[in-house]
Amino acid sequence: MEITSRATINKPAPKDWKFAIEQKTGLKILEISWLAGDGSDRSYYRITLADNEKTLVLMQLADKDFTALKKNKYEWVEIEAILNKHNILTPRPLHTLQELGLLIIEDYGNQMLESLFLNKELNSADVMKNIKPALDLILKMQTISKTNSECWTQRSFDYDRFMWELRFFKKNFVEGVLQYKFNRKENDLFLQEADSLSKNLADLPQVFTHRDFHSRNIMVTEDENLYALIDFQDARLGPACYDFVSLVFDSYLPLSKEQRVNLFEASCSYLIEQTSNHMFDNVKPQSLIMLVQRQLKAIGSFGYLKIEKNKPLYLDYVLPAVSTIEPLDAFPFLTKELPKIVKKHFQN
Image (cartoon, rainbow, N blue to C red; front, top):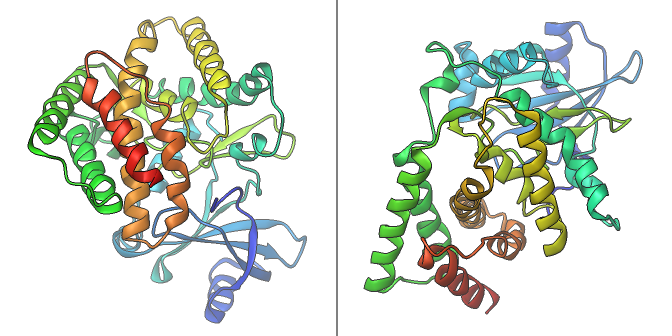
């Protein structure tokens, strides 16, 4: 396991940062310490202030994110403002150092939603209690109206995106990690079912989706009453069940089969009860189809992180992810044969 919280680690920041930040912002800094990050190219640090030991988080951007920040076009900032406007708790940006690619934001501590599930004996009621505030975040996000001027409305989980992600899985995990080559029949079945699956999902009504809504992107405040959302810069249009599936079938959460089934049933009922726009009327069948695409994409990402980023620990979540895919008669290769291939070759 690579990340269980944004815990401070003893890795100093570049020495010139402290002076530059103090000069630019007027802050008096006691210490800047590295934080465990995620699978992205961003780096995170915790700033401890000298005056009152209050802490802030420092985001170091790279490549295209760095360039976007210098042009005042970093989409994290735009989307944070949209979420904040809709009363969704987020780490507000406080200071920007464009020349260094640094963004100083609020600090919501070390506890991720994932940590509420680790090393604990939880019954189904406890699991639902922990998840319900995150479901409320989904409901709030889906009240965000679409406009033609905001960045998240310019991209979507359309047919092409769904197909790209399934090919991404094939390339990075099947061929990359497993070193497995589909035979002609397997390849034809994969492409046929991927095409049908992608068309099915692309036809669903679209709403604001976080895109990576899992337990490591939800921070829990100290009193555990409020959840704060992070890592939202890639938000886009997508099916209403997308973020729901990402959360309930999150492979980082160590849930038993029974707990997962109970959570799915209870969460579906909760979403239906809380909405009047019929968005979740067909949440169960839609979610089981969405689950196939979402988990294969996640496994593809685990493969990419292993091969391209040298982060093999993400492979620990492959079997938990593939084990959540339910057999569907409409997609026998993707939901029955492919999981067998993954389990057989991955376990070996």
